[in-house]
Length: 320
Image (tube, rainbow, N blue to C red; front, top):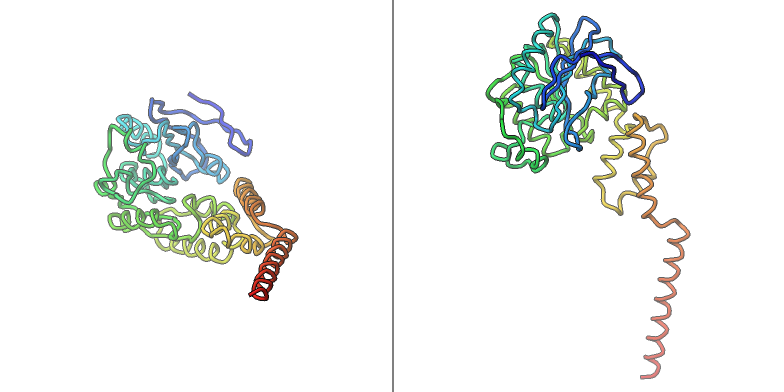
């Protein structure tokens, strides 16, 4: 079935639905000679309707296979073998295939890499898994974990032989633990981006570095150069990222935030949702911060009260 989708920026494109189950859907968009296989991430309303990577894939002139999780099941479903068969029927036509995803989708990109015979995996803030029996530190998404009735293979059971690149925030303890667990099994290259948050891809998008992820194709020498350039550019410019600024602000105490807001640079960059988030956070800080006149009034009142107490004490002493 062919149908038209519209991304958040209003761009429309035709995609072909090559698999449509109750739990998983698979869309295909034919573009260039390279193929990107992407996986949707967690959705608060219970599942994804369209893939969030399709706009970038189309803009970069790539072909795309988009795995869509209709439920937040971390791509654990009895429908998975059939969906993988449909994907492989298309992907084998391409010489260069990269799997990408964020969070839940990143977990799937790593776990299914070998069964899709991809050349490289780019995983943004992946989980090793969400079962607390295997990752006791994980408290997020436990309602989803309890609703998963069928668990597929784990990352440790089908280790990808291709290069795996994990992009994550090393200041975010749980994501760091997952990255280290995955690295233990896959020898993945860790790409830490401090204060990029769980959605590190958004911070990269702020700085116009997101497209560079799609340049990672499994060529060790070339990929190492690209990773180094991403890390260097992020380190040099992250202070201007709206996402990074928000994450740093939220890590501060209420008393520390006003001075941090005052120090925000004038040349902040970011995609629309990042800037909107920063604007809301700044307004919240300002709403709870007394202005200078109010501070002066409070200080004058406190001084007056202290003077009044001193006079009463002086009169009491004279009366003794």
